[in-house]
Image 1 (spheres, helix red, strand yellow):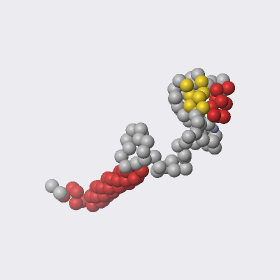
Image 2: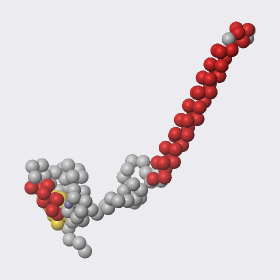
Image 3: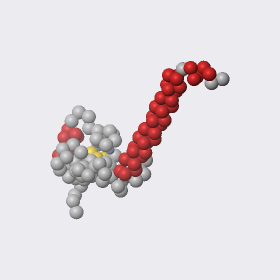
Image 4: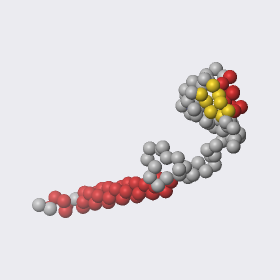
Length: 120
Ligand SMILES: [Zn+2]
Ligand SMILES: [Zn+2]
């Protein structure tokens, strides 16, 4: 019965090695999953789709939500008609408006008009 196996100790060693390696691999995968889960859980606390606007201060702390997306220098002080997005300063909006394809940098819709926002 076990006679053949006993004759080849190298085979049982190999089997043991394979089992050992596979167990190690499983442990490694579990650890990786846990680490990834902790990393993603640390950021937003369960923001799946990416529509949340409240807690976006994890990786975007440097990014000010009110700054122009084109020059990152001026405040966003205008919005586009008809889509209504407010993403750039008035100077950059005019630059877009005077260029070939006047499209909103947020939704890529055609800009018919730029309206200036007035700071309170
Ligand atoms: Zn700008
Ligand atoms: Zn838009």
